[in-house]
Length: 220
Image 1 (spheres, rainbow, N blue to C red):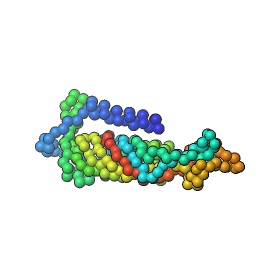
Image 2 (cartoon, helix red, strand yellow):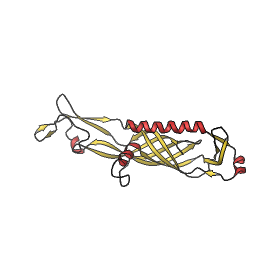
Image 3 (tube, rainbow, N blue to C red):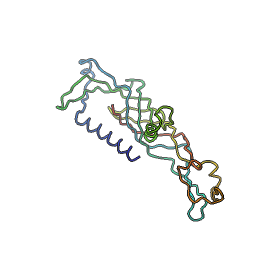
Image 4 (tube, rainbow, N blue to C red):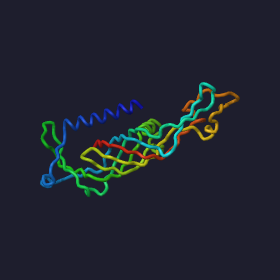
């Protein structure tokens, strides 16, 4: 997890620094029309950060060190997530937009102008943790991933705000285990004294619908 956060932070820093070195210059529509060959930025990839609220009560299960009984505690259903995102503009240009040209190393505008529409986007997100796990497994396809779909709004060239409806996996105690709350959990005739969260006999990955509010920094 720390490695993922570090890589994401470095990606953002690189992209930001690169944009500061090369930069862009906003130009008027008439200037862009005179140059011609205007390209419109369509599909955008980015990094999203924001708060997520699960629509279900979440629990943590542990064995009390005092009397070895099962203790169930509610855990926070609000979390902060770092995800990848891809967005597709809709109602393209209805809300206006801006025209830009890239700046070279000497600060001189270079290349063809391009149009960045301001307005609504369809946004798809994938949680970085599950995406990384899928890549490290048997392959990306046919793997369960945390993510969702939503609506975003573009501000300026590289920033979007989005609200997404997502399905996220949470490690939760199995239903039968909850029946032992306040009691000792006996396995093979003995009271268990700890509950490893990676033990599939007691815990399972449960997909729960959730709502997220995100800030997206687009990388292209």
